[in-house]
Image 1 (cartoon, rainbow, N blue to C red):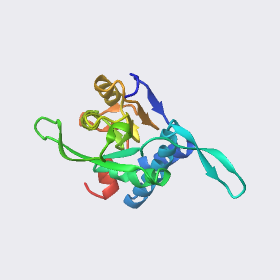
Image 2 (cartoon, one colour; image 1 turned 120 degrees about the horizontal axis):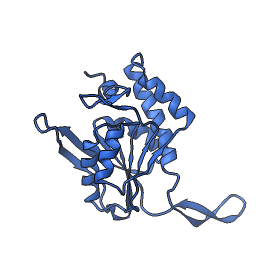
Image 3 (cartoon, rainbow, N blue to C red; image 1 turned 45 degrees about the horizontal axis):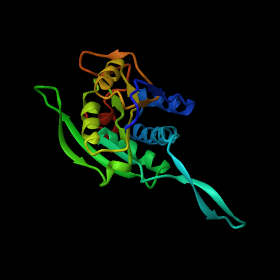
Image 4 (cartoon, one colour; image 1 turned 90 degrees about the vertical axis):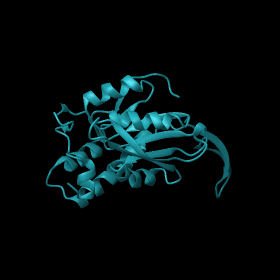
Length: 213
């Protein structure tokens, strides 16, 4: 696992911020929201993989043999938190098409408000893999905490958490439980409202992505 850190890595690329602003607008259609989420996820995937390790391997170009940098180790695993996290997979896989994919399904118990796991599937041999957990929103942080708890039990080499939006309350809660897992996001918003929604936020990402209420 990585060394302990409380760092939030802000990915403030102009294209990402512009597209995120359009996603926030209530005028953006379901189709537009999905397309923008895929585009932003591709850009976020590029940024979050900057530190992937490489090793030199011999290849032959049309003109000569050379030592060339290639990704080192087993394939990275992208783990989607259902259901909204699925909207981030297609864009991410355009950057890392050979990445492995995992899924974790969570729902909030209406009485306790705690996340309950109903599905979990990741590749075998996680020990030498880097895991990137993706979910558009880090609001209260409870679902992210539960997801990373579950992923850690598979023993990955490292874990990162990637989201579109985060609230200060969710960041603080998440890092109380997972000080060793860095958060990557293009925006940290103002606060949560009394119902646990991010303000100003963009609404419910899953509902806007799938056209549900």
